[in-house]
Length: 558
Length: 42
Image (cartoon, rainbow over all chains, first blue to last red):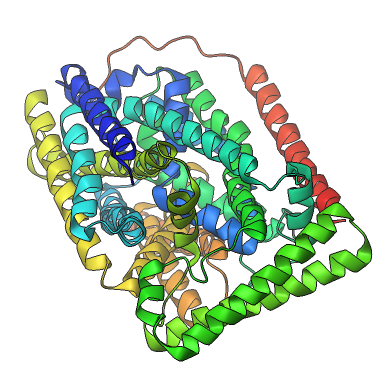
């Protein structure tokens, strides 16, 4: 990285922190600090909803995934627009009219304090650990690719976000999210143009897309039905629908976004913004990954994108042989790609496909070598995009893209910290310890909670860097939770006979059923949301029925 | 809790039209993505 790149990154960090802190003046009451006085316009809330969902590891991981596996991942989002419609009809007006600060506060109005506290507790546990992962995952990648100190990277991302969230509250979160979305998309647009310019003379975008398409990299609809296949149109439409309902409708980090909207209508419009834009936006991000793939058809990519692992292995004669085979395989594939793009006939297409298979085999050999000699859980996907940026982008653009990755991380972290602080202050502190304190007192508790959660997240991030499988566990725990939590809200909104005991134990049954499914079956995680929701609703309904009968019997005996 | 006067909400009929538009646009986008992948894979 050159001085100009550093200047861009530092300018971004200074601006965002300043922009967040200046929101302090609007955050002196608890309505202002936690809900922005329910005054924000739909477009700001809508951008904040999208920014919260777009974390750094989504940005870096999905581009890497498109590079290695194509665009299949986009099917994950096919259920989102339908989920948004359901939420606009149900959750948005319910929560707005109930005048609540948290989604879980509503559950006390409908059931009792135990259900509220349990759901809020699960949110704090899963999100508290999850936000550590959101910080650690990009920090590991950036520190390895750019040679930065890992702890310093974690604190640069985690603490800078904590600072402006502590002072500015939800106003700072929302308005910085708006600017961060602009940074992310300006960065990606510039990246797209630079990659396009880097194609060899005579190779157009059209030719490049034909190359990628001929290898199946542009597949966006897989109609096969399998519970063990991660991304199909069915897992996206059904599993994704349940996941998005759980995430946008029951997770405080998203619910808090639309609670800040001026009115029910503005809240609805902010969610529908995602319904219209999310799939095209994700298509664009995945297309960047495909562009990187096309670029590397003509320019030799690193054998493995994680340079630290290559450095460890490069003196081993076995690895050197793999490297030589890889270089030859790339040269063969490049020639085949040029032949096919110049003359798209079946014979050249076949030769290109075969050369790509040979190329992938040598790469797999290198990855297998690293797994065998260094790191069993090694996954190269997340390193592809940052390594590409470092090696191929011009001065200034590198800084802009690093700022974009920081922006993606910070926009998610700030919303999570703010939501964690809100649930801690409103669902626990105010509900259980100090129900009659002043606004200034709750704002002070909110600020202290935000700070403590920020430090906690940084500490979790440091530990998570040494426990690779823990990251997976934490991510899975999130998917265990969403479906079951959604089930509790379905009981609350739809099932009139549902009672507090049914909701409480239904939630526990739902989470237990997902744990069992994850340990004893090969079912892919998107389906966990369906299982958790259905088990919670059915168990909750049946337990509620027994309670109703017990009450009827008690009434008759009296 | 808020003591703000609630603003006027649009009628349900308006929102039903918007939801219908979301469904139509989503189906169109998925179909367009499918056509995009088919076009470039052949």
